[in-house]
Length: 441
Image 1 (cartoon, rainbow, N blue to C red):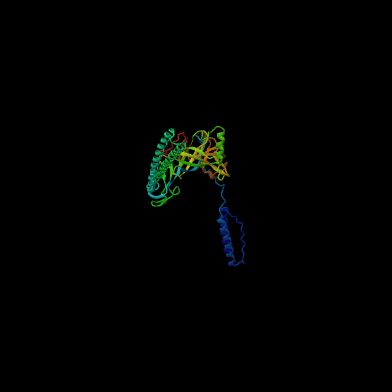
Image 2 (cartoon, rainbow, N blue to C red; image 1 turned 90 degrees about the vertical axis):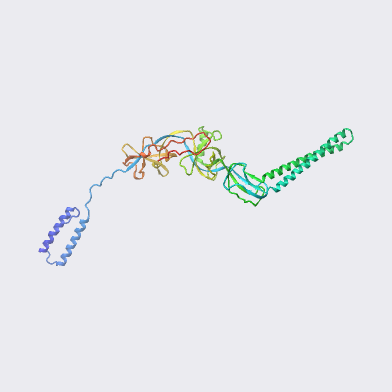
């Protein structure tokens, strides 16, 4: 009974601690002495009680009201109002304004190749020499034939003059005089044939010296000296005329329809009636340093691609541009106007619909649909449910939802980061820009 009383006091003490923890309510234990229970059963009973108490103490007390999370921080800016000329951008490729195939105009063995592979050549520059000896001999023979024909023509002319006098004195018959006239005409024709053969021989001799017909850049040589070349068959090299150079690009069907509607409405004029300048940018530039003028549009859309081919001619006096380079072509569409621009990263997309998040007076997120237009220096032209005083969320779009309260922070890095548009001019000449405009930060 002494041991049982001690165990009862311990259990009472443990129950008091459990109640203080407010985790487990232990029922009132009534300890009745069991004299029949042996010491082993008593120990097992005590162990079971201790395990129950320990499990209850491991449970944490229920917390109080959940702490309110702070509103997420977002960066905002206001739309920038700019005057701009609407345009569309297309990808194009540069091509030589002329591509000339240098072929042999006379046959023979190639004696010399006088150009360096890939060199710049001038009009009239000597490129190659074909063995001229055969053609020199033909020219000499043709020249001798001319002299022979001249001599015969002169003799026939004198005989005709004498025959005319004899006919007057009735020494020769009319039939003989007619024969003299025909012989003289035949001699004159033979002289003309001989002179034509001489001119042809002179041309063939000149063709043994192959010259460049244009200014441009020549390819590698395709035939080495010592090889036999055939008339109009053997290709010696090609020359690409690159000043001016041309950019070919494809205009999509929607833009074609838009342009034609504007032309019919009097907002634009045909390129054949008014020079339409385009701006061009090279692959290593993020600005448009070149100018060109559209001088050709195809008469039909390509049925396979649904695009209309257009061409712009670009001055290339510095020979900076080469055929095959990829360029971006910016073509103005319509007259200048004023519009709102926002940073590109402020735009979201929901099943093809573009939208922005703006803040109301209570710093709550509001969903606004917008239509996007031209892109300029990392900014995008927008139209729709947006004003120039709206605070637009730029960063943090993924952390917010409409109606949620946020902590706005003004993005000072966006202030004045949109440069003014480089407006096209009517000048035709194109040169690389001396220095690029300040890019968007």
